[in-house]
Image (cartoon, rainbow, N blue to C red):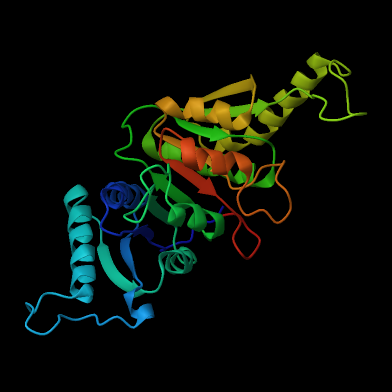
Amino acid sequence: MTDRSGAPVVVGVDGSPSALDAVRVAAREAAARHRPLRVVHAFMWPLFGTPLGPVPFAPPDAGFRHEADKLVAEAVDEARKTVSEIEVTGEVVEGAATPVLRSESRDAALLVLGHRGLGGFAELLVGSTAVHVTSHADCPVLVVRAEPRADGPVVVGVDGSALSTEAVGFAFAEAAQRGTDLVAVHAWLYPTPVGPGDIAPLVYDPDELKAEETRVLAESLAGWSERYPEVRVHQRLVAGPPARVLTEESTGAQLTVVGAQGRGAFTGMLLGSVSHALLHHARSPLAIVRHRRDGHAS
């Protein structure tokens, strides 16, 4: 996990209520991190050769470009109303949302998104931009659903993978910053047969399996409590599907944190099954930590 000294918190806006929720959360995150806030709107109309200014006889403040500038100005104003002491800048950046936000993530400490924008279908739980950006971003991504809780712990999913370890570090820092407890959750499944010749039920020692999973959880947390002695840690070892367990744990959380991929992820997958499921079903803001292009986690 990198500090990215001086890097801003970046929030993407599109004029939706979800984006304004994200702006308010991003302002508080920037203040807590002592970082500036950058508000970005991806402006894709120039890609289609569309006239951007007012049409003949229209008011001078009409046109797509003016609306984009107004949208960003309103988001900047909302951020300053939320936290007055932070430095806030805004920019309209030409391009489609996903590539613009991926580019912004390369120089960001944190990228904040609403869970669904103006283009989302009503039945979708999370917008396509949030899915695509969390799959490719070069920094941690925080996906916001409405106003988050002011109380409750930070919850982190633990599975012993490299990105899980980085997610644990991120979660400890968040818990310390928020002055709250950390709940470290490790969920696993007992071996079950999936085809002819596979392992049969009970052809293993349940006590040994539980002891091994206990070791995975303990080793994943080792050293972090010494770095953050003020954070009270609760370890939860649960036999069950990780996505379901973490979704349930997220109900009372201020924040849920996972790595983009776990130890069961297939090589080449950009987003693991657990993080993908939580992106759609988590009941708190969700932070997804992933590897940067230089091979380090972000």
